[in-house]
Image (cartoon, rainbow, N blue to C red; front, side, top):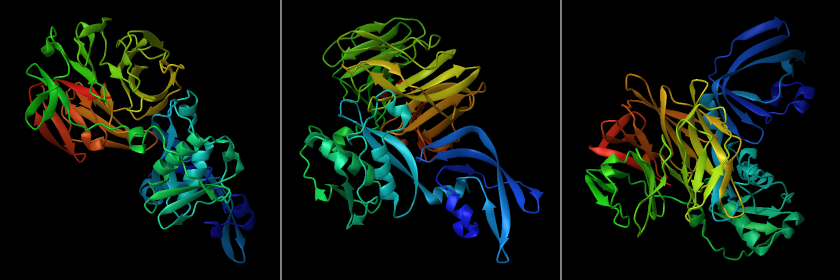
Length: 484
């Protein structure tokens, strides 16, 4: 591109400051013989650190360009920083990447989605972004941190790949890291760099010396939690996993004394040892080997949520700021939330790593979908949710939201005719609309986007095949549970 600029413009132009993604339709206005403006309606904005923000309404920008002749040829002499690119070309030029940081207790990896140009320098961009730390919305609450000592840099400002091994050579600042921290640094690099197609392993070096990292108490697989995605339902008064046409009871839970036909929603922990059910009476909790007990009897509760620390989160629909987290020992923690102006809350779900929450709110008579990171005290109890980032809200009245994998959420709405709307969106990425959706009463997810399950008000459970066709997997379902 610099070949089309004058020497001075080429020297000053910074293409990485911002990327505006639009449809490619850009009306042009001539201000003079040597100056034009281009009207851009950006549907998404990419910042200098690769953070992608999809716009609820297009961002309008007037881009001014000036020209002058050099040796009989026209060159751009003045232009705004950054680039403008249409959505189709953006998907060919940029690639989505998850940078992996650490949870406060170092047990989990927390993804931070970025977008980088697809080129040989991608590995360098990934490592430099890792060294810079997580995005503010994650770091401000302490939900994501890095094992790399502050100020650590690459020695040669490059990460070459040799026979499938990315060579990461760090400067003297990294010598301040303990052996355990160096092991965690290696895990962060492995999880982040092996997303690049030609990288299979990482050689972590400090000033040219390869580091033999000691084993950590958890493996990379354990730090990236997952669930099998098999729907957990209540049908004909039986609670269990839906395998084919059969509901296999979860026998580790005692629901004696509960009328399961009255349960309308629920959540089960990913280790299958804690169960929370919603009924007109409130939220009930049962733990493996024990009987059920009424945990929260406030009126108008929505479906409960779990986090990775054993807490059960509850909130009433009409008091969205009164979120309570109940720990396994029975203690309660009020969780401060950033949506104090919301009129109601429809759904609240925690990611599998326990560090992020997605919520659907009604604010100013419209649906609002937000994701926030979780702030915890020294014992791991949640105390607050951080400043939210907004996602695309579905059409119609908000119904439910779930995590589909570590970085993707699905959000459902329904209009007054019963037609359903579902939007799937990467947190820090693009959104996809599902079509052909009937009425929606609830959603459930898993560890992959194909694990989405949709329950209709009539008890029909469906799963998508692509984004436009649906396969009925069961009927007569009275409640669909989320595994967290």
